[in-house]
Length: 124
Image 1 (cartoon, rainbow, N blue to C red):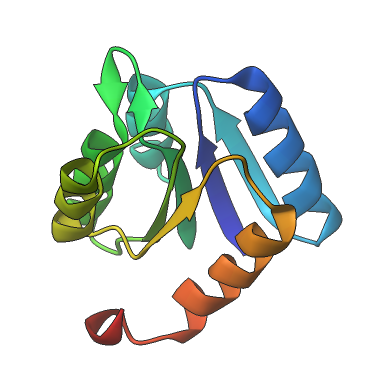
Image 2 (cartoon, rainbow, N blue to C red; image 1 turned 180 degrees about the vertical axis):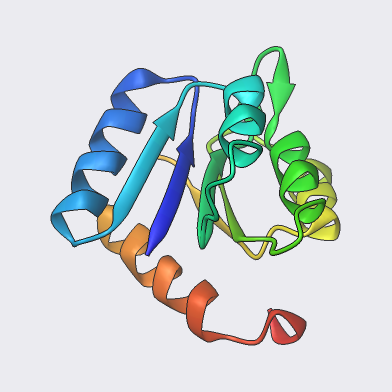
């Protein structure tokens, strides 16, 4: 699976990318919204985007919106430790498929990736 990881915390990007690569995935990690837009627009088709919610000066909702504009939108998983219910609701309305709460459980990340890539988006 081709996965884009987006977070302004370099340690989280490094940990998630390493974990996902060890599980056999092709992973690209970036540090913010603008880098995510560049990666999404570079011609690579991602199956899943895992993005943080708050990455000043941008947000995960901006990443979700950029994904939905693609010809083949990836499934988007939102990570957050401090988003309000309305922030999460906005992200889900924009097209996010799932939310993982921080601190991250790598097991939860793995389970969520399986869920969002095997379920019907209309039923999530």
